[in-house]
Length: 163
Image 1: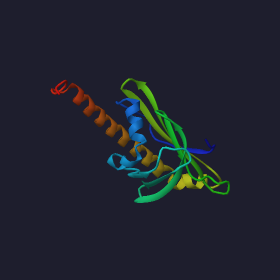
Image 2: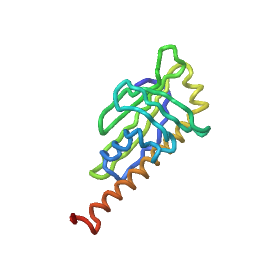
Image 3: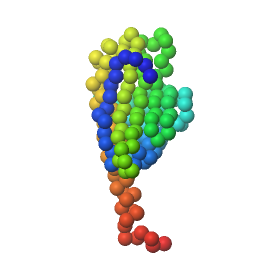
Image 4: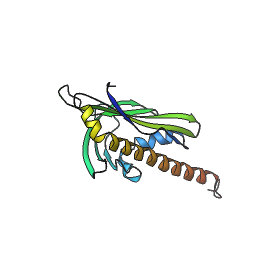
């Protein structure tokens, strides 16, 4: 974690099990199915490996490469910019899933910025980053709730138990 300025999504409650939300969040190859903020992500869920993304801060898709720096399976994943000491901006984005019950959880995304250029960057891009994080959060909610509803329908449908 770095000290400095933060941008956060809303805390979004998702009517789906935390395990399902986690599986969607770390299934980078399928981001295009649900994530309008970051429709392209290529990565392996392995510490210190790159995540190659295309993000939309309202100016069209931009290439971005960050590095996975925290994995708490089922609960939290984070990635960071390269964050060399001489870089004017340092950033770590942490996405957290909190179980609220068997079939409900919350999700929030927080980006912490530091470095001598962080305040200027926040002035220019803080609001677009917040908007993008909220798009991601609400996209995740909609997609996971739809998947969970479909799973429940299959389990309680008329063909249940029929081989």
